[in-house]
Image (cartoon, rainbow, N blue to C red):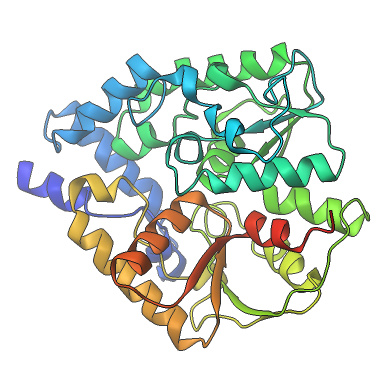
Amino acid sequence: MKQFSETVYRCTLCGRCQEVCPSGILLRDLWVSLRQDLVHSHAYPPKVDMIGQNLAESHNVFAEDNEERADWVEDLREPPEHGHIKDQAPVVYFTGCVSAYFPMAQKIPIALAEILETAAVDFTLLGEQEWCCGFPLLGAGLREQVRDLIEHNIAAVRSKGAQTVVFACPSCYQMWREHYTQSFEIFHVTQYLNELITSGHLELKELRLTVTYHDPCDLGRGSREFEAPRRIIRSLPGVELVELAHNRANCFCCGGGGNLEMVDAQLSADIARAKIEEVLASGAEAVVTACQQCVRTMASYVRRNKIALEVLDIVQLIQRALKR
């Protein structure tokens, strides 16, 4: 049983097997259920306990001080006095654990805050009242621990009087879409920013850049959002989009999902290598995605191997094109 558990956890839960399954089996759900059964059988990798403990004690997957969840605001060019944490606002930007704590990924919320300010969006962060969405618990097989996080986050958004929640993290978005009560209008940032661009709230300057787009597993296969990011990229003056050989529902995973790095870091790196090789074959100068975990995984591989390739989240690309 223990040996079997290691195999079950060596998966990014990307869902590509489900796309190609000729019998239409919901394989991703099957893998998640298998992990839950292994937890009940006390046959699972030890690091699963660490995930549960971190979220129970610190409310984030990295066991960081949750009071520091919005500290990235201090790195804005002109941080507002309220730190983007307001008593009331119609829009909540739910940051997510990776963007809140990883220095490499913090460029994403910094870029998004600048974009939202430029578009005159009245938004707030939840700050330390934002807890992990619960997605890592599902991936670890710890479904029973999710309810407290869900109830807390819903109450935190309601306390702001918000009607809209925006996510730059596809996993947070998918988690809210599938497991939270639909009391609010929820958007992945690509959907929300596409509306801001098409409605004329953002003025964009010309960029000369050839990019390819990597579909994040939880946004593409998970939430079936393939077009909003591409509409954004095509709307940027001077930016040329070339598609990867495997794209949309057939896109290769970056290697960063399913808690794989904690179980088999080498396998995660091997998946990232295959992804970057495909990106390089496209001839693009930069790979754009819409997920901070994808950015972190691909950028880490590129940096470690000294590869001449830029890795960007789509909000960073928009930030670069802003007319200020």
